[in-house]
Length: 288
Image (cartoon, rainbow, N blue to C red; front, side, top):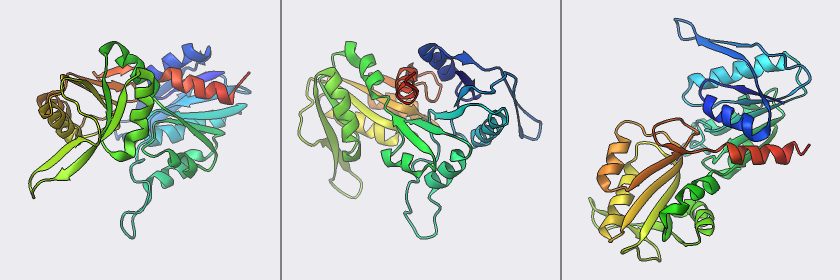
């Protein structure tokens, strides 16, 4: 079994190799002066189970993924698995207005070509795996995030909205604490209050867990409101830390105790490794 590392996911690929006792493929990836991508897989992959690991964010990594798949396919492997730690375009998972492209579905179709299995980590909605035209599965980074939070003595895990409540419940179960979600209440045209639906947070240590933090505005508001309600500490955690612009500054100014993300997107806050959960999903599909 070989792991083929894409340029956006080298760290996860190296951790995954150790988790599943595979070999790492020798790959050359570079960009021409005009921005086009060159891909060459130097290892002999004929007859091998091959796992390509590569994000599809930002856009240039979609092209790299397509080229990696093509190069591997031409080597006649036994099987090809595509692991996408962060699936770009997943948030456009339906038509919000007439005439829109369902980007998640369009990308899934392209990525399904010449692939036997796709695995992604915490897609925006779990049903997105159904968009792929090949076998597809997802794994959750929440168990690994919860393990990281264990020494923090968390009292309450909060989801930023009702749609993410299952993620909060999963973490709370591991941490042995309560969970809830934040409800928004409009006080006036300019003032919106956010507070847990059921649980008081005064003098408690709180973790807010989301799948993606992009510009950080929503998370910063959540931290600010929880602080106003008397929380002792507020930990911010996510699977995919995009942290666009001044997102980190916003969240820190709001009063976050610590910002935590996984290594699906490598950055200074990638404190949690997702390779163990990817390996678990792979082993379910390759039991021998």
